[in-house]
Structures are given as structure tokens and as C-alpha cells.
Image (cartoon, rainbow, N blue to C red; front, side, top):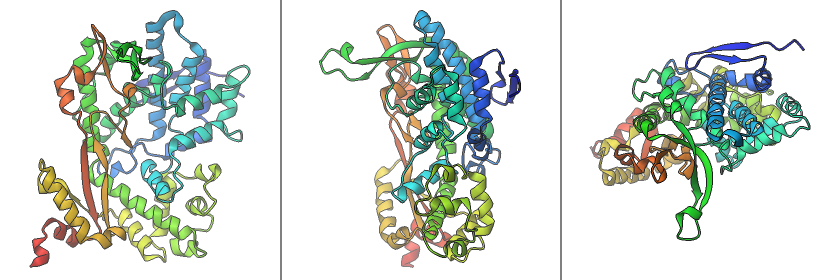
Length: 459
């Protein structure tokens, strides 16, 4: 093995990211980045199919994960400053490496792929794959982690932190909180790479005013609010309240304008439909002929019964699926052939958002949805029309769903202690209510027009 030396990466968000030869943790991180499992993230895009709408949104989970690692190191310095003698260096190391590896289990097109697995009753989210990759004794990551601590146990500690739903210390906040390293990177990176101008983040001012305080994460049994279960987490000094409002508004705006963009959601559902079709055909004897893919293609290997193994999963990425589109566009199965061709040529399904029936009139929206459900019942069942009710946005929304647990909410320090930001900001309070999107994606534009203007059917 060559002698360790200081390594540097240039990043459009953070500038120069340095891995110092003198720091054991930096040397470990660099070796982890060089593993095949981590390098695979170069072939998985951070925003999946968002480039169909935002052409520059081709950044990868590789770049994002390195940025999260860099941000996690900054958060560790804040913790050390805030808690002084109580600082736990080993626990901090676990958090920083967990931040680096948090996305290593993502599959191709991430959430669309997970939706396909869920529809097949074989749901296994990327968090579970991440834990399996980290703990795999035959992989490249676990041996590096185990060698870092004398006596081992480092890989288990990293896996446990990533899988933990509830915090037990402030180090958990680095990987899962309202102000975790993941969000602090993806909000800035996604805003930059999509070119969206709304929702600026005053990052330096926020980081300057991060504090560590205890919050109640479990309600007390008694009437005394001070008797609840308390855990230290990141809070913000009152001076940062305006910047905190902008931080949450930026997240809200990105969800509304980027992550839940109607065209992005449409493409995600089309790809999910394509993958479900491949999965169905993979179970047949003529899977290669029907799909146009070679017998040993990674998609067929994984989607066949019994094929959901870790080695097969690690062979999958966005490029594998995109590269198969040409072959699938020549498939014998007509549904798969047409769908693959439409995706390659960007001939997308036509979207109808029920808000066109009254942007603020939820009653009219519900009536319109019930009518469309009834009129297109058969086509919805056959996926010729796809109904999408999975997108919802609120001030606390995450990618992939809402999470309203206390430690995920942003707290501002007050004379009485940490207060949730909705208790201090009328602006954020106004956006606290969840907004649900209901959309339909039609194979044929004529169907979309009939759904939008039912009088045309009568005429």
C-alpha cells in the first residue's frame, strides 16, 4: 500500500475538500471513497430523473456524499465547542463516517426503484441495503471500518447509527435532525445544480449560530413537561431566526418546484411502470426475448425470483437502466417496447393536476378526482392512466415522505429554552400545514382532455 498523503477534491458547493494525511479519520474516509461500493454512487444521480426538467441536474450521489462528509466534520467541531469536556471522539468518528456512507445503499432511480419493490411485496428501502453493504464481510467497506478501531466494532456502530430511528445523543443529529449534514448539503447542491433561484440559504450565518441544547423527544407521563425524555440536539441562536426561516423556505421551495415537479413525478412513474413490467416478464421462461435484454443482464438477474441478493443489487445503477432502454425499445413485449421508446425520446405521458379545477377549492378538487377515478377506472387499473397521490409538501417535508418527529423539527433558543420555530415565526406557521398533490398521467392526450373537459365526451 502506498504511503498516505493529503488528498484534495474541488467541489462547486464547498470549495476545496481536504483529506489530510495527518488525520486518521480522513485517511479512512479516502479509502472508503475508493471502494467499489462507494464508486458505484458516481453512476447514481442525486435527483434521479430531474434532468428531464432541469438539464443541469446530473450531479451524483457520489458528489453529494462527499459533501455530506465535509459538512459532518464542521458539525463535529460545533459539538466539540458546545459541550467541551463531554465531547466523545469515538462517537464523533462514527457520526462522520455514517454521514459519508449514508447513501451507499441507493438503487437506480432511488425512490422509483423502491416503489417497484414495494409493489412486488419485496420492499427493502435503501437504508436496509446501506446497512447490509456496510456489514458485508465479503465487501470492501467492512474490513476498512473494522481496522480503524483496535478490537473492531466500528462497522456495527456506524450501521446502528444509520438505522436508529430515535436519537440518544447529539451525534445522531449529524445524520438525522432538522439541521443534519445531509440536508445542509443537498439543499445547497440541488439549488445550484437545478439553477433554481428561489430559496437562498445563508449557510455561514446559520453555522455560526448553531448551539447544542436538550429538547424533549418523548412526551412525559405526568403533567410536568420537564419530565419527558430529553436528548441534546442542534438548535439555533435567536439571531439566526431570519436565516432559519429562509432555510426552511428554501427546502419548501425545492420540494414544490423541483422534487415534486409534475414532469419529474410523471417520469418517475413511467420508469417505475417500466421496471414493474420488466419484473413481471423476468419471471417468465422467455424473459430475454420479451424484454430484449440478454439473459445475464443485471436487471433480469435481480428481478427474477430469488435474485434479490446483495451482489446482484450492487450491479444496478442508473446507467445500467438507461443503457438498457435501447434494447428494451426493441423488446417483443409491446408494452415494454413502447414505454422504453417514449422514455428515450422524451414523449412523456400528459399530466393533469386536479388544482386546475380550483387552486384553492379542495372540494372541487376532490369531486374532480372522484369523477376521473370512476370514468377511467379500467385504464387506471391497467396503468394506461397513472394516479399520483404520493407527493405532499410541508415546511418539514423530506424527500421520500414526511417526518414529523420532534428531533426533525427546527428549534430556536428562547429565554424559556428551545422552542420549535413555528412557535416563533408566523411565516413558518403559515406553511406548517401539509399540501397534498393529486395528479393523473395519461398515455393519450385525448384522454387527458376528456378528463379535464368532461363535456367533450357528452358532445
